[in-house]
Image 1 (cartoon, one colour):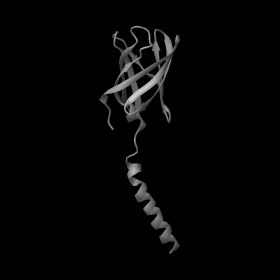
Image 2 (cartoon, helix red, strand yellow; image 1 turned 90 degrees about the vertical axis):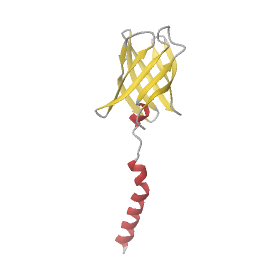
Image 3 (cartoon, one colour; image 1 turned 135 degrees about the vertical axis):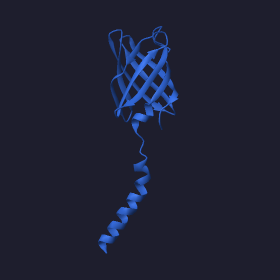
Image 4 (cartoon, one colour; image 1 turned 90 degrees about the horizontal axis):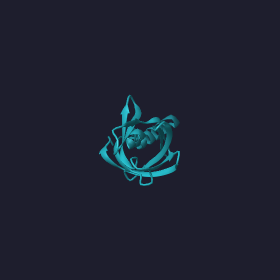
Length: 130
């Protein structure tokens, strides 16, 4: 009888948790897609553009394009954590760390340039898989 009760409650618990376990959100999909960003405090030529995140081989990759140039800057060292996402880009031979997070489909963050921190915000223009 004791085994039956334990088995019953275990099955009940699994049945209750099953929808959440099956549909757990992949954190990479939060960022997947193209985002149009603006950074008013950035130097001229670096104030606007797009950030594109893609999932390739179960890994988040991406690149950034400034509106004023043709250059594509690949993201490096992408890490997703509870507080958001961190990554690096290299602009004019300088490493620029970026910290950001998504709330209500708006990506906000800070890029730490050699001249100091630059705040930015971005809105999704091409939705990722949700």
